[in-house]
Length: 443
Ligand code: GLU
Image (cartoon, rainbow, N blue to C red; front, side, top):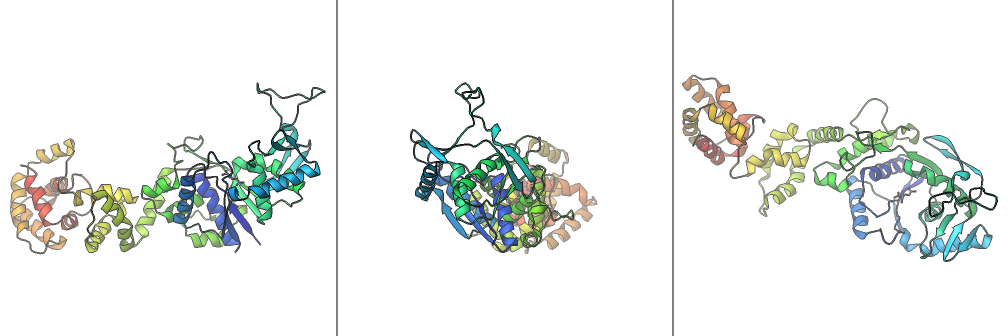
């Protein structure tokens, strides 16, 4: 039976690194028809916060990472204390004041890591330091090894110890976690042995670095999953991108579904080398998912954002929104970009940037605009086709090129020099705003 776990500490939000760890565990469980356990490691009562815990659960649900079981370490303190007591009785642990410590033996420990192969550690490196940060020396001048705290002086259990007891008692078959936990592994192996448990298999995932080659920082993308959600990334795009941070199906394919990853997933295919987080790549993937999504679903995703943005309660016209989304579908990498790019449609009046205002004024099309306004005012059904027909008639009558008018019209209507088809844009903008903006352009 394959059983894995994701074990976040609720001392911060769910970040990219944590989400990737959760995802790889989940993929492994799904691919092996195993179980995925969520274990909230809230032993640190000062730093653990309910707000973080709720955000972690919410972000996991949003990403689609469902769990089979959930545990809270804060509810299991008695269990950890009982095991510490048992080690005290066996003479493997000892008491120092109110704390219980594990006596560090001097020996080598081999860890087999499914991704990295065999790693050998020597406990001789676990040296105790004095207050000045210098190695503490024993009677014969030899460095003293650092014993592991199992139960702290305040009675709360230490992370490494709880982790071992839980992984053993929960029947975890594979511990898949970030590379930053490699150094804990030998100490945990010693505890498995001391407690008489057999150790699970270990797989340490590669680090995720920023594009500057350093640790992932806020600037290079280390923000909470919920931030990406607010910025208008789709969960399926984020899942796809996170999967690429250390894994690939092996055929240069970059866009793939969750079900195909479940089918192809194997721990052995996970890279050893660090992964680099690229915001541009994530954005590109998100844009691909938006392009592939059907228009009505996009409209449903956008409605709450539009309402919030416009501070409106009354319902929006879905058929009209579908037209706008269709028109902009290839032009918004995130849902927030949609709001930015189409804001001119929803606003009553727009402001035109000074340099575009200059371009507009220099084109001197006041007379042509007036003629066009008169023509368009006569249209009853204000649709792209009719608008285009009338526009072409005006252009032919004035004996000018269509392109002479398109550019200034676009600026006057949208406040931007680029955008999708002009006649479709006029249609979604509506007759009233179109005529108003054209009339005011040279006023
Ligand atoms: N609670 C630890 C953390 O958030 C994870 C421990 C583990 O996966 O073994 O980093």
